[in-house]
Amino acid sequence: MYKLKWKEKVCATCPSADCLLKCQYMSFSGHDEAHGEMMKVCRGEDSRVLHECATCYACEEYCTRGNHPFYLISERREEKGLFTAPRPITNQWINMTQMQGKYMVGPIKDKALSCCYIPDLGILGQGEIFKDVASAVAFGAEFMCPAVHTHFARMSVITERLPKVIDNFAKLGVKEVICLHDECYGTFTAIADAYGIEVPFKPVYYMDFVLDRMKELKDRIKPLNIKVAYQRPCSNRLIPDKFPLVYEILDLIGVEIPDREYQGENCLCCGEIIRSVSGYKLADDVQERNLNDMIAAGASHCVFNCPACQSSLSEKVVKKGLKPIHIIDLCKIAIGEKEREVL
Image (cartoon, rainbow, N blue to C red; front, side):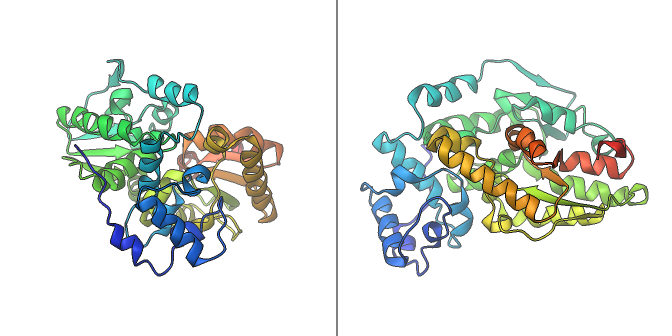
């Protein structure tokens, strides 16, 4: 029913082929090779891209023409049965995120606070910053963004489940859904738009919400005066226009982000999904380069946006001598809601 909005002509006339040339996990000799491989994907032919893509989402950001190379790659993989992970792993993700009628919904009026299917988000969404929406929580598979299945080349699962998730929110009568997970906001905006799926409510990115609240609480802010490395999650590639919010929030609370090699458009994934789809060797290499880069930049902390990234990297971050912390917790410390000693 839902089809990806893309045009072969847009790829055919692309002067840069940046979607593949900028890829950090595949190498090409130049424009001609990269463009040629992408055209194979467009035509439904076999391409080494379909075998080597690490599912980092980055090509969605690298494509300045909005032609959705990553979604197309994922669709072609599914069409050809070239799944990224062993079938038991793929099926496990499909089964454990299946809607089963086991969900939690708080007293919701015009706004809902989406915790996706991640319990830690419910903890983060508490306190002074979220005082007006903390109880209006929606949690469970019924409210989970299905974007994770792009990693496993199962776009059909997304187009099947996303309309149901959107409908479940709509039935709550909400006008706004504040997304505590990057992937949820990216799903309701970028993915829904790419497939022509209507969203009858306004998705709100949590960093927009947090920044507005921190400005309201500005008199309570005591600068933290620390230097951090920011771990940008793969899902943020779907919404690159929201990336500058990190700098705005951290600048407001007196936190410095020093320049380093693997940040911004050149960021590296947390590595755990790569471990599932591309193996241990690449995942370990990505994580080691990323963490060493944080150390070289002189950071004392690693700041997370995505709880999955935080879960994947926290122990490794600590072993490198860095302190892991979520950006929301940093904000809570800055306004005195959490003890500064945890820094």
